Image (tube, rainbow over all chains, first blue to last red; front, side, top):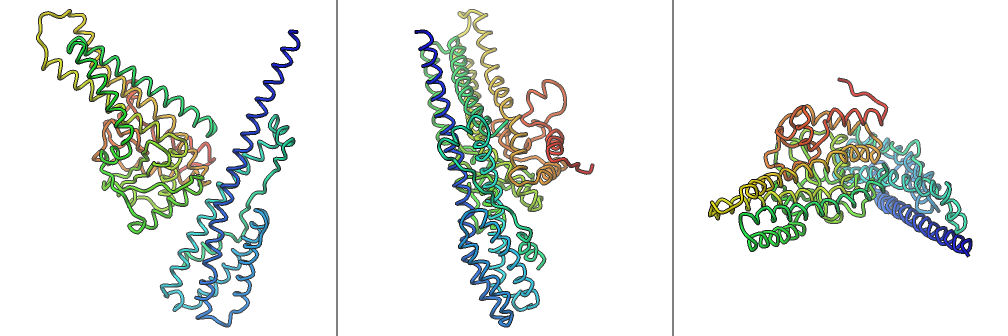
Length: 185
Length: 300
């Protein structure tokens, strides 16, 4: 009889522990989702800015068609991206394309002096900074969640209930390029 | 110490502070029994608890008033607002806390508010002028870290309750002299009552100061992690260290809210007793901790 009670006790403790671990995983996963939506908000904001920016530069440098196409395509790729990994790659390509766009703009002092262009540039810099902030937070939540899903004992609960690892949102090489250009002007 | 552990510890300490506060109010009331009789003591007790509750509901506004902080709109200083927005995003806060400005040349900053969603960040105009953007961001990150780590609730509570205890014992003390009929009291009773009346504010102060020191290290470390830039935090602290001016509207009730001690009397120097009264660890210690964590050395 005592053995039975001990067994029941062990089972109860195990179930309670599993519940606690499950709740913790859910909480961590929710934080990852919140973190990603923070990035998504800023990516959308930047994607809304870019057409205006392209139009502003076009007004002075209509013949630089290659750069405009590159930016437009990279922008579409970010909007299309399924998941953080893909979005990160698209983001770094867009960063490079924007860098070239600003390099083109450098050659037109009148464009540089226009109020509209400067404001767009400022907004873009702000958005880039916010993407960088949101990325730091998101990656820290992914790290916490993935660690929980890959270490014992929460590993067991994660496997059982299908908590799969999440992707990081990586900083691309050219990511800070437009920011640097914006500061030098 | 992980963030979750710190938040849990803060919850426990908040409870402890409330219990200690109630205890102090009871002790002060019991002590004043000797002077005021039953009616006076009960009235004092009721008044103290009611005032404590009132203060708790209005804590954010009260601290704003005490420190002479006024709200700052985004259009007043878009650059500063952007920095706060960025730091809030990096901290994962659900919303950007409002900004307040204290018109004071001494560089300093604090965060206050009874609830995280009602918390705000205040900076002095001196800080705004003195700090380059990178260091300003680090200071803001330090304050946002206090909000996220739930330090602000505990610190606000401590500020308010210390004020209440000080007021009650002051009140009781005056009443004792004003209402004293003399002659027919037991001298031991009178002396112990006096000691309790004098000790209560002292105990409250020690309590408040013991609360605020360790969390400064953690907020520095959180800020460094948030910005991925321990050096910026250390540079900002160095800049605060080099400036020796004092904040005009800061007293013992609000000193522990600030990023560095706002007055020199509280900054003090050396000795065990001075250590007990210190609201903040020394800036040198904090810079050293950051240097260790970040693996760099500031030039001296």
